[in-house]
Length: 261
Length: 257
Image 1: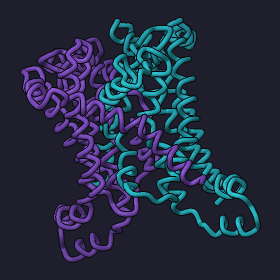
Image 2: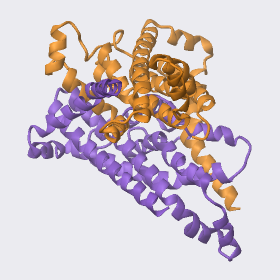
Image 3: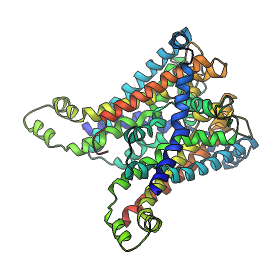
Image 4: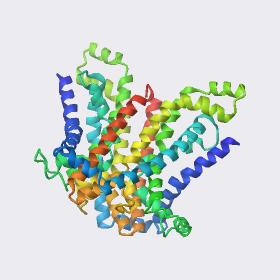
């Protein structure tokens, strides 16, 4: 009896918090057929938002992948003073509000800040432009690749790497032929999570982008702007597209997730 | 040699993007003195926003402790068709962009609600949005502990005549408590930082439904960066204290094992 009560409680909670709301948006998006959805997603504004989102996400994922793999190797394979501190600092971005991320970047890279002012005099505008949005996205998705790779690297051990080294492989060869194949699935998992976070980031990007339509507007900002302007069709269409990306991410992540974690 | 260069590069990357900017926030607020920070926090609109954020986050943490544990329990101990799909759905709030989360909730709990439940522009709407984005925390911390839990003790308790409730309270709950607590702590820190999901459903009405992160965003937009930094510092401080307490709980639980 208790068993069925608990099951019903859990399922009803999930139904009303998660399943019905998401389903309702998808249903309302396609209520008038595919035509309006395609029109909404292929408007100049939407296409541009999609393009900006992709540029920012690809840069952020590329940077965090290089940083993530490098740092994971350092944390697992090398010994150096301050290792625990570095490991703790990598998780810091998770606890910071996206709005504070935006504010923090403005205070350093804004036009009236020393660093930002200097960069601007040399022709690089960071805030209210793509570089700032990349920085914000890198900030919020920073731990994802590191945290995906570290446990697998630990489990893998360094015997094979040592063997390759003894047989005369250079560090680069060892890394390419031994380390990378060993962590490839974990790395792919981390990259997928990072990409999803980057495509979906809203708060931090909203603050640093200045929300300039046709310039720095991403897909998530497009959803908000459309909704506030009572253009429900566009808002719902873009939201459904983003939700689809989220579901696909979940499916891929499920397939790639290292066993036992 | 290689290690030094690598660590140097990693620290530089982390500093340029995370550490220096965050330090700049605290510096900007603290540079005006503690008195200024306190005054900025006590500005009526910021104070109301912080109050709402903290109260809503406590409610969210409490609801999550109960419902998250129930869901984890059902996912581990119960068997029914479609369980694998339910298990995957739990992670959806993490994968879904926060602005989409807000929009989605507005579809069911907004002005055109098919249930005729309109939570738009209300404090309850804020709580629902926070419940949505924090759903996975307690489930995902309790689930693995429940999976690993040795069932011998439970069987022993039953065979000694303990009822379901007594067994749960005396045998299972003490084992789950650290995981429940850390899940609730994570849900709480996420809640006090949350921005995107509350933007659409709350309407951001000052003194009523405006949460702290939205209050900070408002100050940034009106170019009051120092005030924004002060409220941000308060939020960072609360998150920091909670995270340290969680770390202590983990160590204490680790020592008990």
